[in-house]
Image (cartoon, rainbow, N blue to C red; front, top):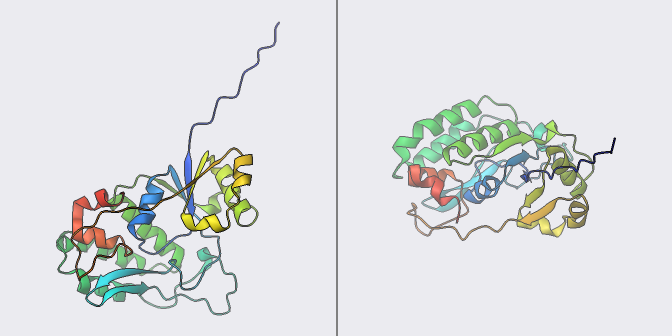
Length: 240
C-alpha cells in the first residue's frame, strides 16, 4: 500500500500581547490589547518603583495628578509584581478623589455606582496584581474590549527578557506578537523570526479629543476619564 503523506495544517493566526499589569490604565493600553486574541498578564516580571504598576493619573483642577496604591517594597529586591503586597488601606481615598474631581462629568451619575463597587471589591484584595486584574477585566468589559486574559503563571515561561517573552508566545500558540514601542530597545526580533512568530509594533494614536474637564486636553490619563466624560461612547474613543 502506498504511503500517504499528510502535510501539517497551517496554524490559525493568533495575536498575543504580553504586558505587565497596570492600575486603571490609559486608553492606549486597551487599544493595544484590544487588537489581540489574548493578553498575558506578565506579572512574574520584576516590580519597578515609580512605574504604572501601582499608579495612574486623573484630571483635577490643578492638572493631571497621580493616584498611587501604597505597596510594600522595602528590602524586596527584584520582587515580582505578583508578590507585591498592598501596604495600607487605599481604596476609599482613591474613590473620594475620583468622586470629587469627576462629580461634574456628564456621565458620572450613571457610572459612579459601578466604579464605586469596584473600589469596594478592591479594598479587600491583599496583592497589587489582584487589584490590577480586577480593574482590567471590568474596564475591558465597559470599553467592549473582547480579549482573552490569562496570567503568565499559567504557562511554562522560561529564560530572561526576549527569551521569556518568546517562550510565553510559544506556550500560548501565538503566531504574532504585538509589542509596545518601548521594547524596541531590547527585544531580540531574530529569535521570534527563527521560531516562526511575527513581531508587530504598536503605534499609539492619533486619538481623538473629547470634552474633558479642567482646561487643556490630556490624553495620558486613566481610562476612567473616558468613562465618566463619554459614557456609552467611551468605547469608540479607545482606538484612533
